[in-house]
Structure formats: C-alpha cells, structure tokens
Image (cartoon, rainbow, N blue to C red; front, side):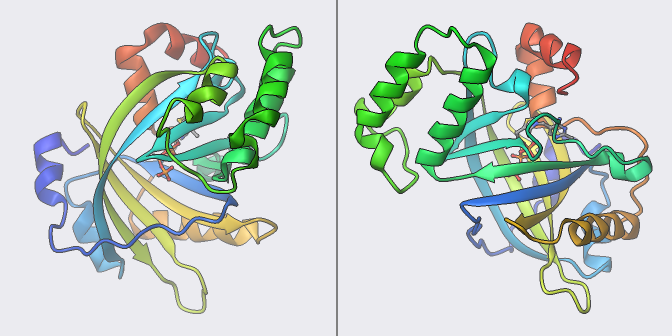
Length: 267
Ligand SMILES: Cc1ncc(C[n+]2csc(CCOP(=O)(O)OP(=O)(O)OP(=O)(O)O)c2C)c(N)n1
C-alpha cells in the first residue's frame, strides 16, 4: 500500500484531464487492488496511458436506518452531479459469484439521470419499509415537484432541489475528497479500453481500480475477461477482497453503520 505523501508524488502532474463520459445507465464492472509504489511504472510498462488527474468530492446519502446501503444501493453527489449505484440483479449483490479471481470483481448498475435515480430510490425504500411513513407523501410530492420532470442531473442548488432528499428522509452519511490519476489501456483488436484509476482520499487511504463500463445490453463476459487480463499483466495476485474508500471511511468514522453492512454481507 502506498502512503499518502508517496502517492501525491506518484500522481503524474503532467497528465491532461479528460472528462468522463458516462452513459445515463450503464453497468460498471471493476476490480479494486492495493496500490504498490511501483504501480505507475508497471502501468506504463504494459502500455497504459495516463489521461487525467483530478480531484472531486463525494457526498453519500442514506436514510438514518440505512435502507439504501443495506440493500447495496449507493446514492452520491459528486461535484454536484447525482449518481446511483445498485446491484445488477434485483435480489443479488454487486459482487460476482464466480470462483477464484473472478470473485474480486464487482458489477453495479450506474444511474445518472435524476428522475431515474429518484424513481429507483423510491422503489428501494418502498420494498424496504412498506409502511414507511413518508412514502405516500413522497410519491405525491415528487410527482408534483419540478424535479419530477427535470431531465438533467443537477446539483442541490437551492431549497427546492433538496425537497426530494427531505421527502425520502435521506441524509448525508459520508463525505470525502479523492485525488485521482486515471489511465487507459487499449488491447489490440478491442474497441473499448480498460480504465485504471489510482485514488488517494483526504482521510489517508489509497486504492486502485481496474474498470470497464458496459453500456446497457453490452457484452459482460468481454469486460470481465479484459479486467482479468489487465490484473494479470499488472502482476496482481488476489485471493482477498480489497477494501474500497467507503470501507475505510465507515470503519474509521461510522463503526455502527460499518458493522451493519458487514453483518448484512454488503461489505
Ligand atoms: C470491492 C467492493 N467495492 C464496492 C462495494 C460496494 N460499494 C461500497 S461503496 C460503493 C459506492 C462507491 O463505489 P466505488 O466503486 O468504490 O466508487 P469509486 O471508487 O468512487 O469509483 P467510481 O464510481 O468513480 O468508478 C459501492 C458500490 C463492494 N461491496 N465491494
């Protein structure tokens, strides 16, 4: 594991920044790994190209009873844009159920359009607590609110925009800033590249991620194989699940929430 100061110096200051272009609904397949001091050298050796370095703040939201995260549903606002990650199968978790290294892969549906995010959150809340007090009021409120017809994904900019959070009783439970250095690796004959992110968080934690975004209905098997090949060429051996930024944050700052997620086998 690379320490905070080392990764700051590892982050390549010469990289240019390219904006991420995410589909409004796609499946993110990823494998986390422990960053070693030579990771950037290894990435360059295998032909990965650094395409960006940037910093962003994530704020995560849930109900006080953790109705979303206990169903493996993750609502966040990143630099003013809303994102929801949820398991790809309704009943299953995002973790791949295959054996060996494949079990280190996670697969989440990413939703980035606000009306779809609100609809999904409402659906989860409904399943979670059928007699949820706020719900009937929420359904009416969100339908009537200007947010219900908004097609873009915008930040909480005024009181009105926060109404859906209040109506669904969602409150922030985690907030941290990440410095990220992003690489892309294109294999011969493959149309889409693999993305590798090296993240350093403001509370002193580092983690790497190999990631492929599969558009809705896209080829999942290919993505899984691409990630595995990249992991192998980086010499990553892994039998153990690698904790992410959220694991580290909750373990440190919200032990009760963390325990509940461990008990529910979400983390
Ligand atoms: C290995 C592993 N990762 C995540 C989870 C569940 N989970 C916990 S927090 C969480 C939400 C954050 O997901 P993560 O991939 O860690 O976000 P980030 O590192 O910021 O990457 P980006 O979204 O920019 O690509 C999830 C899905 C899990 N059970 N196991």
